[in-house]
Amino acid sequence: MLFIDYSSAFNTIVPSKLVIKLETLGLDPALCNWVLDFLTGRPQVVRVGNNISTPLILNTGAPQGCVLSPLLYSLFTHDCVAKHASNSIIKFADDTTVVGLITNNDETAYREEVRALGVWCQENNLSLNVNKTKEMIVDFRKQEREHPPIHIEGTVVEKVESFKFLGVHITDKLNWSTHTDSVVKKAQQRLFNLRRLKKFGLSPKSLTNFYRCTIESILSGCITAWYGNCSAHNRKALQRVVRTAQRITGGKLPDLQDTYTTRCHRKAKKIIKDNNHPSHCLFTPLSSRRRGQYRCIKAGTERLKNSFYLKAIRLLNSHH
Image 1: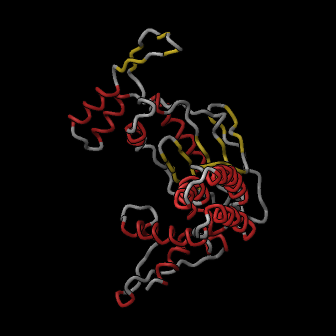
Image 2: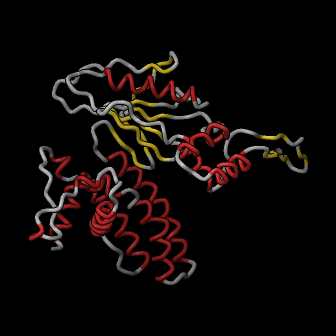
Image 3: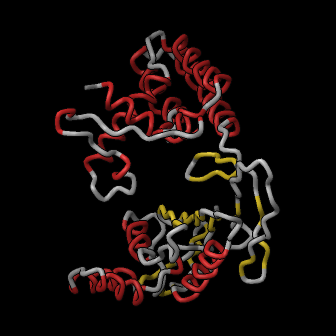
């Protein structure tokens, strides 16, 4: 996996190129012209105390903090797609990850994908920050082999054993101790605030609301992706935070296992309803006589057995 970092991604969008891409996607010309007008001729000043700089007119980039900017950036990069079937390019706003499946020690397609991405960036005025771009290799073979380093613009990309991707710490062994340790530490810091609020005399309902918003949201972030493969030790550490919060609030709080189960079921339902979801094909209905039942996926490893998809299918089948 190659975790790409761009230098000032939103600030480097070329409006004229964006409009061409929007027209290619079939957007109304009037809307395209509105976007062009929105992104060009924008005055910008810098203020320090009571001093204001001379205005500078900007004709590139998207405004920082604007709700439209992530959408415009996603549309601008919609044509940044994998060239080889064994690779995937995962994008979320300005976070881009190249994932390559390497078989028979042949890394040709993966390395060609990285090269093609570099060319695409040059053509679209995007600058790769090689120093912040990281590579992580997930290899469970008994005899691991050396993987030659990736070079971008003549610079070696650093290999890492762990990387924080969209708020989740992923490791090259796909264990979740690093992530759960980070989550528990952050949640425990918020418990201090919960205790302070109780001393101030807030009601149990208000304390529970604070827990749900600021602590449970940390514990359950992206929970469907990682909780299923957590070790018993990790789960106990997470649940210990919930029990501590429960003593402070004085009310019953949902176990993380229950939260995980609920989220899995809800997410599976959404995927089934969305024909365009990349994982929609994994939920294959059985014969009409067994309505609501889905074909189980054969699991050759414990990691797959405990993954979201198998858990979700078991949940769906158990509800019928």
